[in-house]
Length: 199
Image 1 (spheres, rainbow, N blue to C red):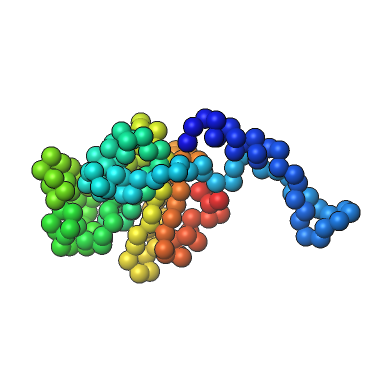
Image 2: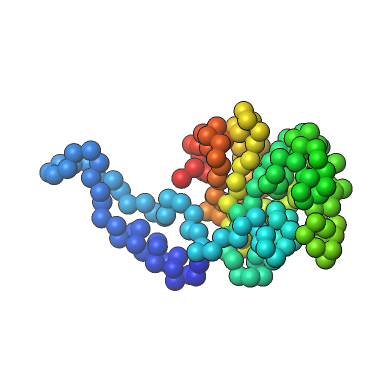
């Protein structure tokens, strides 16, 4: 989204009239206008799993391709390894993307680092690794990409997965204005707030 659009949103936010809280009319309590938008400013187009039609999904190559296309935001999926490291992966196993039938939750980060997550897509991407969240955050910073991090977890593990993601975001010093957390797992979403990552 261009600077004019961002400035337009900020101007709208600053000039918004105060809204009544509770009762209306004389003496009603008023809400102060927000100094900034209460949520990240998303682009009109968000790359799905990076740029999944043009590069292997949920890979650093996919993030690079999305940036080359001029996309400002991408969605990626996160799952936890056996040793609690958030990695970019949609499916519960690596069967489709790396030829390994084992669940990612049973594999260590070291074991994943040696897998080829690119050849299934095209020989041009042979050797593309399964990235972890830290690597994706670093590259997204370099490319100026915002990330929609969709949390995937086995039943009953959503809160634990989100907790590991929040720790990684804090360690990295990620900008809350460039991160959106999403999930179909209610426990994961509850774990996300309150805090800088909750809208």
